[in-house]
Image 1 (tube, one colour):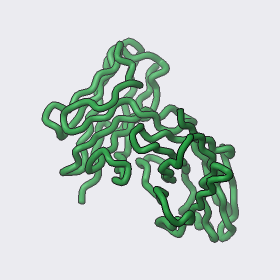
Image 2 (cartoon, one colour; image 1 turned 90 degrees about the horizontal axis):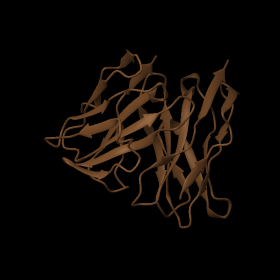
Image 3 (cartoon, chains in turn orange, cyan; image 1 turned 90 degrees about the vertical axis):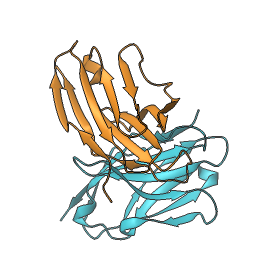
Length: 115
Length: 112
């Protein structure tokens, strides 16, 4: 079974530039998560989708971050414009549904460096 | 709000020695508890989880964890560490209807 795919794996941009990350979850997984993991910290949830609808985006900085999952499968996370403090690893995870009993499967992440 | 504390930022153990990684949580009721491992350049992998029942849970790769309600702890253990266990370990808590909250992680180094 293929895992969660993410691209690119690494990205370096200058502040005020825009960047987008892509995630392809495990086939059949209805719930998709984006996490931000700053160096030295644990992952922090940015947004949670159930199919193509947003379940929780309370911690997403909506003035600069946006995410979509138009067809309920792939998802993109965008930052526009980027700030230095956005340097982090962005992790995508998926699970069968929202139940806590279902394991979240994580992708390898995209490491973003903002200069 | 629920929170997770991993008091040890970095631990070094000798190969073959036993391991215990500490995790304390703050939550009013009995939470769902998880341990994840993250190897360099890899995503997080679930080691084990506790929802209810037996307070000693077995996971993959020979790991186990014990839930102690009186101490609000969920410590991860392994009787004999292998060099391949070197990684970052994260404890996480979930109340059932809120997002996973992760601790800051403990980095494990294994020496010969």
